[in-house]
Length: 434
Image (cartoon, rainbow, N blue to C red; front, side):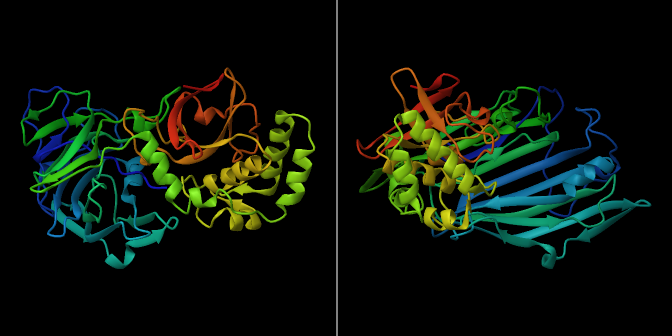
């Protein structure tokens, strides 16, 4: 489900910017609506020739309001160079808005053109900014900038507010187009302690206690054998470790077992394990009559694939619940595979739910315990000490004894409710192994 909000260590103010090796002064940000004529007259990116568009700057400022909500103020400005770059004029931003865990406000957006030497500004009508639910957890803000043409500049500014101190926003310096300047400033109360996970491979333009910065960040494009863009983009992630104030101290450091316990406590995950499926008795009776575990697994796996269609939504929580998804014959990836888990378990097989991350979602960092890294649930079955099945019934051509390619060479979280443990397992062609 959740997009996944990643978190980083900082005390006091921390600013981060990204910068390639250069001897020229780092670019700067500007106030909304104020633009240099030189930027409007630009015809190409000076550090990545042939780029269709360029992020002139992407600035984030994170602070805590009086109610200790986390607020991200973001301001991004993009230059369009040619017809292909006009695709940047349609933006979609996802956030955890289904239960008001986050919400977006104070949106400003406009297109700036140079028309016969005169600066022309076309503001986005707020009635043309749409907020649409993706599912019961995720919401998407979508807008299209008007009057976008080669030479135009588009800019967007908004506030993203989170009501949980653990939901500190992640920050990506790198995107599919080059970025001239990217900055994240954070102002964190001294009694909040965040752990940092910094993935930056360029030298900082500035590196002090309060400000860190990189500029002229090249684009990242898809390449053969690449796992995902997210795995290769320069970024910083945040994880809340402790809150320590006079007379109070609490640790928020997660372990994988704690992550598993929390998942089991959610009705949209652990609460679904024993939900009865319509007509399951007939399937279970047939499965129990088969002679081997392999035959039982093969039969139930194919029954789930035959009876359910994946709706292309990858989440680690159920949307409608397994019973309703089974009746409707369609569901998200977790609904499909928790139906599989339920039937296999009722047959008497020792199977486990496993959280995984698909290839496009990015690889799991086993040293960074949190559920937000995952985007799908599958079923894990240890055949013996050398062989394990990772079962995923979402794919039309998937088979029970072959791990889908999209899950290979990453980690999954096996959740063992009976023994109250959760462990990461590496998923390889020979099965998932510790």
